[in-house]
Length: 70
Image (tube, rainbow, N blue to C red):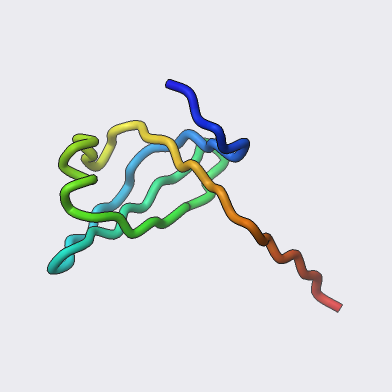
């Protein structure tokens, strides 16, 4: 498996919430960070995603905003 994105994060699927067309997939990293993505049901089925299965979040964004508390 190879990706062009530099932000590839491995985790475990902790929740899959089905909607009418899409599903919301939550992945928890080893550090305990939760990432949530909305994908199509077809993509979820094709990937064979299930709670407890390992998966990768590939994050590619043109902008990432950073802030601080003052």
